[in-house]
Length: 386
Image (cartoon, rainbow, N blue to C red; front, side, top):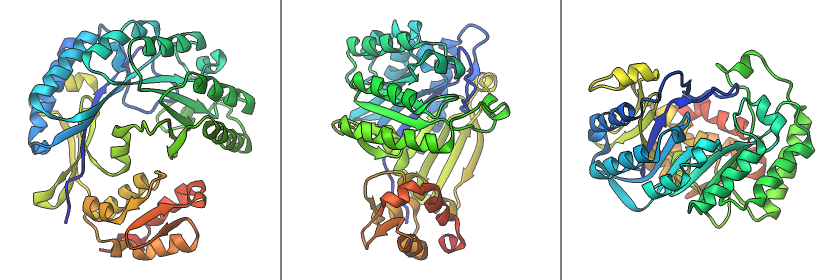
């Protein structure tokens, strides 16, 4: 029987100054004036239409993502957060993250965002090398990025995440490590360090750039992990590193198969309906114009997640973590008995990809190295029989 997991709120802002060639998110180049007030109004109408799904549950984290949320003024963000407080219950230590680009315009807003109630800032640095930033289609340079980090601290933020990529076109091992060392030198609370991948429906996928050799990328990764560990960053997820356990609570909720309500153009939701013993997935209208024109219904697609997909989704997320997975969480949040996946757990354990007992599951070091292979095992017929 399903039990209610923690609940988060995701708010999507779909516009960017320029679409990056590697980005497969629902982001759109801004070609007109930003419809700031209209979009905030639509976000609140979207939320109002979904309140029945929340069942008066408290929100433990809010993530303002995009796109580029920092195109919106501090006043707009303040008004949005105040309106959310009137409609929702927040937990006492709620984490409220805003994604921001390091551009000069956004930097001027940092103090205002902090005053508005944002308590975690995530900066899309991606690289500090000007040549690589140009190749990635970023509109900032290394100096601007460095200034943005300092201005975030000066604005009052002490919980700052820096996004950084490796395996960039024409990037050498030394350049990747120089980037990482430079980011570490700013002493952020959190670093999201991940490999560039060529995703479908992106310009890079259509016109693939020359990427480093596979062995070089593997070397970047192994040496980078060593550097992060030496700098006292704890790896708690495949691409997430933190000091002093300042984990991203919002992302942790995803990885632990928690619930999340999504509002905004193209936002996704996953909500547990205990009374119906179902989990529903919602997708909001993706195109900004369609979303802006909507009146009382913002949902483009509704579907209930089949049991076999719940198994796979849970494992897809939870096995990425470096923490122990509670079997009780698997059963409560997927609504599936662990006996259903016992043959798969046994096969994975025999291959030394994970270890498990009556209470917990943990991915091994070998399992992390072959994570995709491990996750795919839960798509097997042995894992889908109910």
